[in-house]
Every structure is written in structure tokens, then in C-alpha cells.
Image 1 (tube, rainbow, N blue to C red):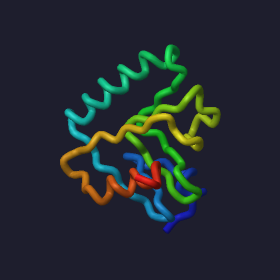
Image 2 (cartoon, rainbow, N blue to C red):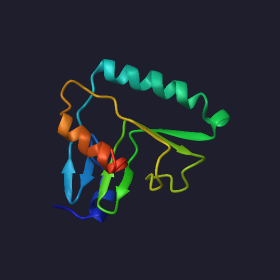
Image 3 (cartoon, one colour):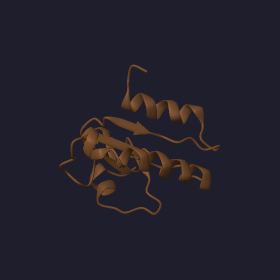
Image 4 (cartoon, helix red, strand yellow):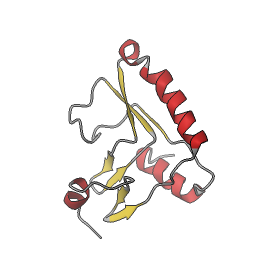
Length: 117
């Protein structure tokens, strides 16, 4: 168990999610995962100005006071003011599933972002 402040002041390689005091490792994607992330991210980032969005790859995203997730791709309307952590509800989060992802873990992430899902 660590505090939010400890989590936010520490760098992890690879980065980890923070859920209610616990560090949660993410599934490391393979080349297909990375390629899909690049293609989708590139498509959407090429339209940032036109659509008024800003895109980020695996940003720390605060979904509650004690939960920080790392969506593969995250888009906010306009610009995120903080620059380090996305704290406002994102316009779009994309999680690219890997063969090692478990349905229960993905469901929990979805419910963090969209509680009525």
C-alpha cells in the first residue's frame, strides 16, 4: 500500500496504474498492439486541430481520488491544462486488448470511466 502522493512522485518503468493504494501492472503489448495503437493514434492526432481535441499515449488519468488508470490512448476536448495528469473526464479513451488481458480486469477499468456500463 502506498499513498497517492508517493505514486505521483515516483517514476515506474514500465508505468503502473494506481488503484486504492495498490500498484497494478499493465499488460505489455506486442508489436500488433503497438502498431494498432500507432495507427489509431496517428489517425486521431492528425485531426486534433480540426476536431478540437488533444491526444495522449498512456497518460496517467485520474478517474477517482484514489484511482489512476493508463489508457493506451486518451483524448480530451481542447487542451489539458495540468500537463502531467489528465484530471478532467476524457472525451475518448481507447484500451487495445492483448491476449493476456483478463475480462474482469477490463470490466473494472470500464466501470472506473463509465460507472453505469
